Figure (tube, rainbow, N blue to C red):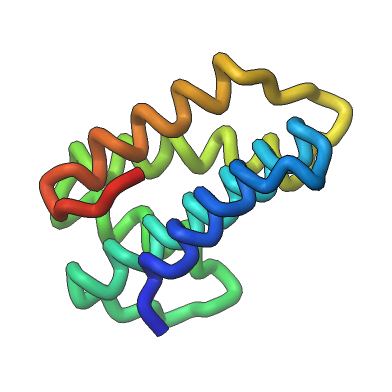
Length: 114
């Protein structure tokens, strides 16, 4: 499966007015993060040894190959964790916009539109 499909789904979720705005932010952040992480794992040909530690291992190995991309993934991972696990902490439009800007910066060299 192409990881970019998760990015596309994340963008579609954000635009689906049938759902609450904050729920859309949270789902969109989660899918886009997931797509970006898998995009870099695939394109950097990273082999994950321990699937139970997939995110940690993937980010460590991405960081070895490209510390700039690694630092940006760590940044978006923080908001993804908030979106998925801290429902008592609101996510507003400014936070979502910062997330999207970081993703755009990260993906622009690959001509993937965020």
